[in-house]
Length: 597
Ligand SMILES: Nc1nc2c(ncn2[C@@H]2O[C@H](COP(=O)(O)OP(=O)(O)OP(=O)(O)O)[C@@H](O)[C@H]2O)c(=O)[nH]1
Image (cartoon, rainbow, N blue to C red):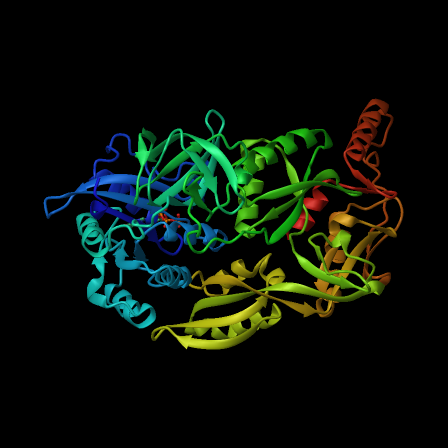
């Protein structure tokens, strides 16, 4: 097929602005999927995606559209994830296209990720088609959206298409704009075969499936392919496109988006953003923009019941097969036993993996505090990376510790400005720019330590702004900070699972809260138990667990010995379930309760 009749585009938007719903409509309109087959939100195939209503993985689909000009176009659509944790996937999907449909929720207007995604698309040289979506909503404010489009994104208002994925308004207009405004596939005349790898998936029957966009040349079964980042060679077994089902084809040619199955065994050999070429007449220059993604957030995952260790291990290895950005290695904790240290792209990624372990693999787990990766320099040694507080070298030997920061753009209503500025300050952030977006909203640009936004920043942003605030961020540089390791001791024994790396100024406050909480959660013991927070042996906060023996038989006056025995047995059983830390019995859900908050 002639490349001039191919169009590749993706849909980008802020979370929940309706990408998946609109994609479904496009599939239906082009008869790619019939109404009968079209289950709601067809492209979100993972159960968890459906339940949480978010798109985690990008799914490409090839459609055929008979345009008003009488020609039939091959249109490849990418549905992209909207959340910041998956920004790298968004930018790879963008790199596989020539244009982007930018969705704006008519009731919400332009939000942080609308701006971030529009900038990503412009940076990749894509043509943007603005679409104001959900115009069926009674709260739709078209005038405001058009003004924001012009003032914030510098896109002429008259280019906007009005649509509703739900009621099917504007679908043909969007397809016509894709054909007319988006240029045909670029770089198709390059002399060698070049395809961009934008995703990979593990299928238990077919092995590793690589998603690729061919820029020049063509690939077919039997070709020897070469991945340029690691020089990995393998034989192609099958190529095809997504309709959205995997459909085998003879070749994938310039402009095509589809899949390549080769005899590569491990998904970790496939790097997103890599360039695929052929061993025969290989390309010498890679397609632009490849970068290695590295996990930014780490935590320990432990089975609640120690006999579930193998089950947890199997679950993690399964999840890893489909998610090269997720890492894990075994570790052990005095308090929690044997478990795994896991690395994630961000907090949402972490939550999703934990949820999938619980749900799809039926293993109850405890997770430790999330931690970022610190860089630590000690006397006479090279800088090392520390992602677990337990591994922090002896404080006496440390010259400096530096921590990762982020550059955040935060969109908020004007009236929340004061509260958000105090929140940023509380989180050790510095705000260096304030831009007015329209009469009602401002955008703050600030630097924040990544560690500070890990736990509750987004929730607090949403609650202070009554749901109207939104944030996007990119990683910034590392910066030196006065960081210390805080230990928690129960009856004099440090409990490694509660150790954390904190800023010195915040240690005391945080230590006090933790001690108080633990004192509350741990049931009264037979003797007085001290709970202490300490930095390098110096106690900074302390609380006590109450000393008491609950006499469960007190109410049974009289001689009913069998009843007494039963109650005492029950008490004994209750004790068995406790976790021993030194001489202190701690209920297992203490860890969950503390680590949750
Ligand atoms: N009223 C109305 N609601 C819509 C429309 N399109 C989508 N929605 C609703 O908006 C919510 C989000 O829609 P999705 O299509 O899942 O949004 P998304 O952008 O794919 O979400 P992420 O993948 O998480 O970024 C759902 O509850 C939809 O039913 C529309 O045109 N009108």
